[in-house]
Length: 237
Image (cartoon, rainbow, N blue to C red):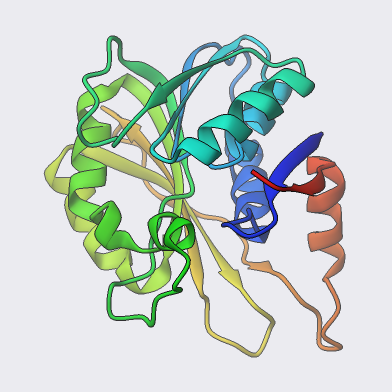
């Protein structure tokens, strides 16, 4: 999959690859994946395009607020021959014309207290004051069909807040996986599968570990990159 990215703006990173792998692991038990898929904060389009590539009965929809990334999402959809409907604007303010069977997102999750980049594009893509957690989950709950699935990743320090918001909104967390930089460090990211209207007990998948003890990509990380099979092209936009 070829993906154009900005030379001087926010670029996708390994979080998205790990999240996609998490999605694949959890969808293995389902035989017929179809319906409407929404990718929130599409950026260059990578996450939604990967899911739509591997589950071609899904109708892809993507929402993005930044004009440059809307251009890239459209470009990357076209060059990879994947149809996508683009919603332009603030996810929290868009009046969607349908509900969705699956929603995926690698949302901005850095807290506002973290030192911010001076690049405005990166600020919007990275920091959660642009998409507050409670508002984000609340809006998802309104546009997700019953039995619909919601996959996202977030800073692990916010897990208790995520669990509280989901419980209050009757969104059942079915699966979690923690991402560790290496075997000696604490988890930095949590990947979450939510299902609306479900009563299934939560499962916690084996940990994902990015680097081995020599500082090289772990074998499992290389396997994930092979499955994703993405190639980035930097461009001026």
